[in-house]
Length: 150
Image (cartoon, rainbow, N blue to C red; front, side):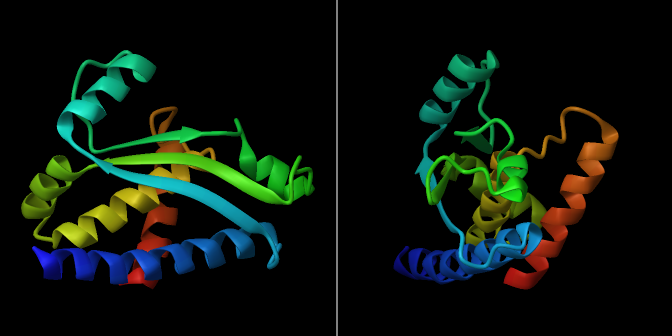
């Protein structure tokens, strides 16, 4: 179990660095400071959050709760209310990540990294549930980011 955590922490460090660079490049703001919260939780917690905030009484892999409705617009306009952009919270269900990792033939750490990237894109306003175009754009961005991590 210890090596799992060590591998995840190494990948997480790299993930955060890659995501930070990707966002700063996207908005052309190399000095921007950003803050996100990533929580690893169990099935009970993720179901509770999904029920309460999305009215879906089911377990899911990742949930994102943005603090700004469209942070990319604020970032591009440089219209931030504070010098630090607090993007929001990401919740990743450990059990679902384990199951999906097995199904996709990935390590659990790799699946959690993918879910973190997916959650971050939701915090930035991407939404694959709106339409096919948004889904395609989100998939492309996930691929770009995860290819830089692995």
